Image: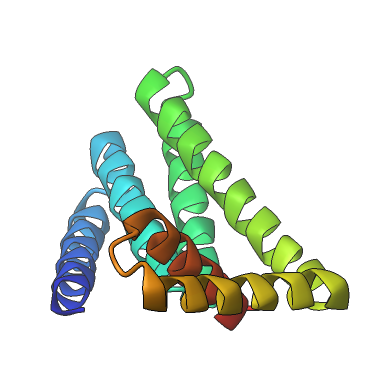
Length: 147
């Protein structure tokens, strides 16, 4: 968790630095692209920490930053690529959130997955070294906890 806190701090410092630079030179395309990249990395970190509102906000900021950069440099292929990557990740986050809402309403699926977690837990009391099943159980439990 400390590494996530350190990364969050580093990203915020980088954003503050880019904002200062953009106050002096608001049309500096490379600076806008770099700021968008930092915001995209912040999105990934927020998603890993399951901070979805913060992730969505960072995605919106990244897209606005890339849009401004593309307004200034419409042929910049790197900015187009970076914007595409942000939209790609945003789509997955939106789909994940939508899927979680729908799954939380599907009682049969929830019962099946809860049963799977219980069965895996019983199995792991006997076969303690099965890392595949342990990881599968832990991932499934984490998924259920986040519904």
